[in-house]
Amino acid sequence: SHYFGWAGGITSDSEPNTVEMSLELGRLLGYTSDMIISANIEYSFQKLESVELEPLTARDFSIIEENSEFIEQNLLNQMQVFYQEQQFVLHLQDNQVAKLITKIKTKGKQKMAHCFYLTQDCELHIVPKL
View 1 (cartoon, rainbow, N blue to C red):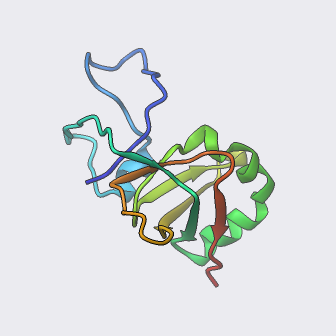
View 2 (tube, one colour):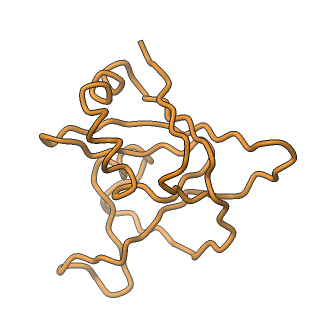
């Protein structure tokens, strides 16, 4: 299963009742352009207190280092929903993209939810990838 946040936008050429995703994200998840994927609404969100984002490659880490200020200011505009071991594409300045995977740790006896929502007071850690 994959979980996504939806900001409510659609493209003008979309079929009714469809949502498009970026080509980079589709490829990362193993989808092809001719696939039809079913979607359901998830209601069991939990506030994310801390998340580790691990770049998939050393090149992704280098791109993240170069764009750290942009990420800090714009992450919430691109990503609002996270789940354990989620792979995603972060769109950065100058048409750069970085691919990452999430590592979520819950505190104490807190039960692991299916998915989490990101807020501005969440601790964000980027794991170095050399």
